View: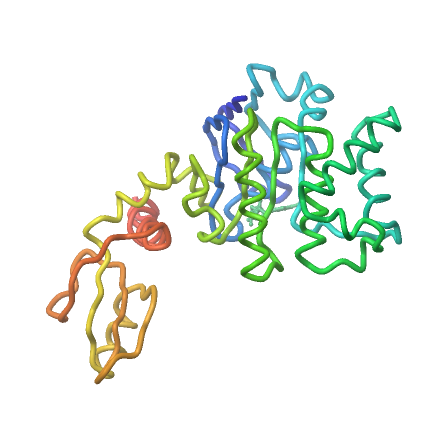
Length: 297
Ligand code: ADP
């Protein structure tokens, strides 16, 4: 599978660009779409799932133009929106069966098998007779992914994947998606939380104010931050200064002061050492430096 986004623009009423000449290729595997609130992620997702049309530009799915092959491409899609919820009193398996029917699975015997397999896959088989709206947050999210996957989609789009999940459920959810990503599919995770991207994504893009700020692997983004992350040993007084001067990533109390991780090119006389960046450092580095430089141009 391959998605190619060409010169995509979306201008809402009022005239501001939610997407501004976006060019991006999304290959097989897990793809992270990262950006702060308002970056244009949901707009892009809505265009990809054919809920909205772009103002100009085009999206190609395996070479097929989304605007001309809507129905065909729609049948390849599975979508888990951020605000996925249940308004019905259906049981868990009934809900999934309903979703399968909506997805066009007409044969009831095949549907039954597919529903049972999917319930097993997302770990909800035991809960199949429970009312869907009575499931826990994590279980609802898994039922959400089950309905997105029931039709064996080739493109799976998940908006804000870990919203409302506790840490244990986050890991389960991430593992479930990783298992699926080994198939011939594209999984797009759209999020403003760096931790949702992490090492699970093969490729990623950083969106800011409707523009593509970075595209590549998470490792490449991390590389850009090398030499720009410091662990400073600070006194109480220094810590307050540092907090004013630099983006602080984390703070740990130690004997006589604090160990403070900051993103900066130089720490100008404070006592500290460089440390290896992770994706969170890299994201902050990128937003602080590259984007500020650009906006000053
Ligand atoms: P994200 O999902 O990254 O938070 P969005 O795609 O929701 O970003 O929004 C991108 C920009 O478009 C924001 O400035 C937002 O205010 C604007 N926007 C989003 N939806 C609409 C809409 N329906 N009408 C007008 N402006 C919108």
